[in-house]
Length: 202
Image (cartoon, rainbow, N blue to C red):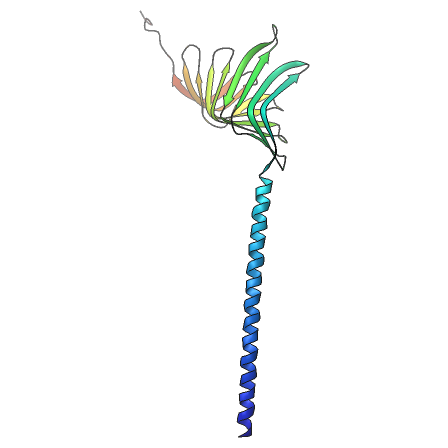
């Protein structure tokens, strides 16, 4: 029959078209996947470049002065300055020494920490992990975090602070705030132990 030959031709052309259409779709999917993988690789490389320090300083030694007087001395074994310039990291520890000039240059306090990070735009240095501070009164402060606000010239902590006095009094508290010499400070929610002389009441 004449119609049957035409039908076979149409089916053949349809199958031929479907085959090429399927191959084109597959090629498009493969190309899209390749592009997506390339984008992921680029993003990964970019993120690595952003987090890569642009400069490394060993043996950092910085003096902070006020009215020509040395106020604070900061030392760190290693300083990493990152590409976005929003922070500088001190991953091997940091030491901050404060001075008072009432009767010549005299050390009034010291703070050591296992880790430090300086946020230059905010003028803040965050001290973390095993933070230990001492002042001229013989008081010792321990915490997991102590923040130095250079603009306000004060230290504060959002975490619990353990204070030991020269007399042996031991206090725990929160909402700690102090001047840069760690001499005048306040703390809330305090509790602790006060040693009592054995001859008390006799």
